[in-house]
Image 1 (tube, rainbow, N blue to C red):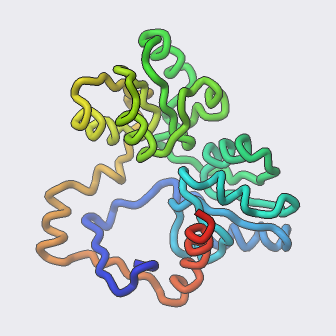
Image 2 (image 1 turned 180 degrees about the vertical axis):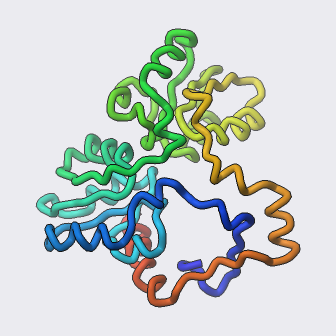
Length: 237
C-alpha cells in the first residue's frame, strides 16, 4: 500500500494483526532519539507504518546483516522491535546495537530445552532456525542453518537430508510437507503458532476478493516518511 499506492491491497480479516509490531510505538522511538541524537534506528519489517516513519532503515530477516554492515561502524544503532533477531544481527555483525525488548510470541515459544530433546531424538535431522526464535541466543551455534522462512524452503529444496527440525512458526510445516512428502519435518515446538496468521483463511481471502472489502490505506503523510527506510533497504540489497 505504501510502495505501490496505485494498486489495491486487501486484508481478509481486520483482526489479523501482529503481536510483535504492537510492542513498539512511534513515541518510544522519539524518546530514544532524544537521548541519542546521533543514533540510527533500524526496524524489522514487522512494524507499523507509523513506526517505520520514525526509522532510518528497514530490514528483513534475510537482509538484516547486509543492511547493518552498510551503516558506518561508529554509528550508534537501535534495533526494534525483536530482541532475538536483534541479538542474532549483533552477533553476526559484531556491532554495538541497542536492542528493544520485543518478541514474536510464536517464535519465543521455541525454547532451548525443547530443541535439545528433539535433536537427541532425531540426531540425523538438520536443524533449521529462524533468527526470531527464543532459543537463538543460546543455540544459534548449534543450528545447521539460521534462515528466514523462505530461506528454509529454498534450503530444503537443495538439501539431500531426509529429516529436518524446523524452528519457526508452524504454519510453514504444511508447505514443506506438501512440497516434500518424502521428507520428515519436526516442529521445534508444538506451541509455535501465530493466531493472527491463522485468522486469514482461504474462505476469508475469497470473500475479500469477491467483495473487494477491507482495502488497506495509509495516511499519505505517514506513508511518505515510512517508505524511506524501505527504499534505503532496497538500495542496499
